[in-house]
Each structure stands twice: as structure tokens, then as C-alpha cells.
Length: 534
Image (tube, rainbow, N blue to C red; front, top):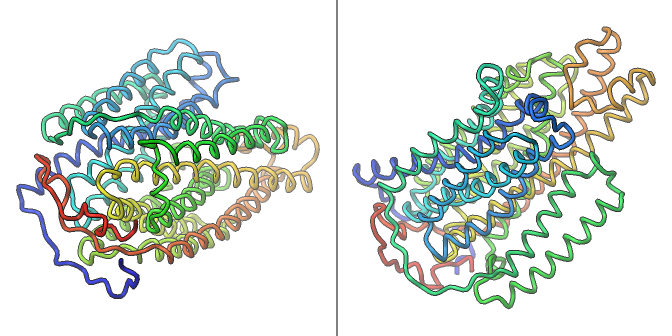
């Protein structure tokens, strides 16, 4: 057992041969395409939603186009991870690509909003497998010591997709058809599918397994309830309404029963012994808080750029590039340093502190703040996020036995996704209540009614048509509200910093469980004593 981080000596660095490196880059390219598809479709639909609603005559069901994807991608994360552990990750990653492509084609062919929602749910199921499979396969073929520099590329894909999504969605909708935001996935997915089939060879063992269907059902139902609660709360229903309180109570009961079922299951979908792993617990907790902070607060930056700086939806996406640039720099830098030093604990500690500083800078954004200052704040936030996100995956994968690699990766990703859903809900409630109180204190009843009782986020362009005095009043109210959101987000970044201090640093292993993407090589690391986090 390793109790003193200072006593850890970084093992000698083992670099891949040029042939191994080239092979891994080809595999990495295919995995990144899969990750890109899943991440892109979280954002590419946003700019096309008004056009889709007009074509399919389904404005009342518009939010479900996004919610259906979020629900199925989230609840399927642990399932894909577990099935990959049991039956082989390559086959299930290929299956995830096929499911995603089928969902994409059907979404593009949809003739009604109900059809589109169902097809988006199918897409989400495949997306869950793409997110988990891409990261878990990297855990198979690349040793933890070398994994950092390659995982940085995945972070870059995630950052770029957040920018390219709205841009691509707007371009296809304006110049071709909104249906092509789904059709474009097909050629990209086919390339990934063929590449994986040719270059990745992961042998599977024929072992009889028992699927934990009860645990799967309870977890899925509980998570669906939580996501609906966070999606509907404060928007469709009041937070204190019977519907929201009922969802919260039922979800809590289902998840408690899930824990009891998992304790007795032969092959649980989420083994509870993972939560005896100090590294896994700390990384999952940090991931939850970072997801809460990132998705809950950063989602308002495009809105700020559109309302205060008058940017178009497309331009506001481009103006987020400083944040993406910060993420790219720290993704690559942290990955290289993890590989060189063999240490990873310092990065979530420093990253969460930098994130807190960046959020503090953004909390000063006002009606007359220059874009240069906003860009600096976004860049610092991006640096902080890049130092944390991918390093947590390396830490989790290094701390668990190979038999639990996919499950642990999926569960850690699951916590970050749930954290994001809660962040959007909680900070969204702060935003809505603060903005409404600001407008009620300063705006006339006629203006308040025109703005939909403060719900300006649904149509920010309406502000541009207001008289100058009223426009200034709304912009000031929005700026003060946004400041409050970032101020509330700062303590959560501080919590991530504190939790990171309790993460146990374990020497990164030098060998992968599957070498050169060809076969399995037995490792001494599978002995229980070699996993100090357990």
C-alpha cells in the first residue's frame, strides 16, 4: 500500500517504437472519430432546433429532441462499460457505432417530432457506447504511463466539438438542410467502423456471464427520473411542484434499492467495491463537481456574447475559441507531463484552483466589459478544465483491475455527466430567479411581459429591437445576473480543489494489458496487491 505520495518514484519512461506509435495513432484516429461523433451531436442540434420545429410542426416537444439524447446516452454509459468488460470492447464499440449511425439516419429521415425524438434516443444509446468504448480501449492498448499524452488528444476533440457543433448546425441548416446535421455522421462513422475492424484486434475469452438485469433496470429508471427532474425543474414545473418532488423521491428510492441489489448481484452492473477505491472515489467526486461547474456556468457564455456584445449565434461560437484554446494547451501539456513524470495528482489540484480563478474573473463581466477581458477569463477557465478532465480518466484506469476497466471508466464518466445535468439545473435556477428579480425591480410591466417574464434566453435577439434605454436596462440586469451565476460556481471549484487533495497517487503502470493492438500479454499487475487504491 502506498500512503505517502512523496515516496513515489517515477518509473523509468518507456517509449513506444515508431511502429507501435504509428499503429496506436491509427487506432487513436478511429476512436477519436467515435468520440467526436458523440460529443458533436450534443451541440450540433441546438442551432437547428427552431427550423426543425417549424418543419415538423412540433414546437411543444422541442426540448425533448435534446432531452431524449441526454437521457439515453447517460443511462447507457454503465451498461456499455460493463458489457465491454464481459464480452469484449471491440465488438461493443463497433455495435455502438452501428446503433449511432442507425439513429442518425432515422433522425434525418424523420417526418414528425415524435419520430425524431425516438430516433434521437436511439442515437443517444449509441453515443454512450462511443464515449465509454473510446476511452476504455485506450486503457487496453496503452500503458497508464504513456496514456496521458494520448488522452490529451481526446480532450482536444471534446473541446473542438463544442465549437464546431453550433457552427456546423447553423451552416447545414442555412445552406443545405437540417437533416444533414444527422446524415453527416454516416460517412464519418463508416470510416471509424472500417478502421477499427482492420487495425484493432482484441481477443475475447469465452466465459459464461450472468447479466444484472435488475440492477440495470433500477439504475436506468433512477437516472431517468433525475434527468427529468433537472430538465423540467424551474422550466416546465416549479421546483416545489408535486411533479418535481415526486421525481426526486422516486429516483432516490430506486437508487437506494439499486445499491442493495448490487450488493447481492453475482456480476453487478456497477460493482460496489469500486467505492472502496480511494482514487476512484476522489476522481468521481471531482468529475461530478467539475461537470457541475463547467456545464452549469459556461453554458451562459454564448448568451452573454449575444446579448451584451451583440454577436450572432454563429459568431458567439467562434468567440468561445479562447476557452477552447486554453483547454487544448492544458490537455496536451498535462498529458505530456504525466507521461514524463509518472505523476497525475498535482494536475486536478492545480486545475481546479485555476478554474476557480477563471470563474472569479468571469464573475466581473459587466455590460461594458471589453471582449479582451472576457477572452482572458475564458482562456483561464479553459486551462483549468483541461488540467482536470482527462487526467481523472488516467487516474481511475490506473487504480482498478483490468476486469473492471470499462466499468470504472463508464462510472466515472457517468458521474461527470450527472454533475453536468445538476449544474445546468441548479445554476439555471439561480440565473432565472436572479434575472426575474432584477427585471421586476427595474423594468416596466409592459417590458416584463414582452420579455416573457424574464425568459430572454429563449430568444435573445428580441433585445436588439428594444428602445435604447430599455435595451440598456435589460443588458444591465442580465450582466448582474450572470455575475451571480459565476460567483455561485466558484465555491464548487473550490470543493473540487479540496477533494483533489485526498486523491491517492499510485505509480503509473508501464505496460498495457493488450500490447500493440494485437494480443493479450499477461501482466503481474493483476495481483490484488498491485492495485493500492483497492
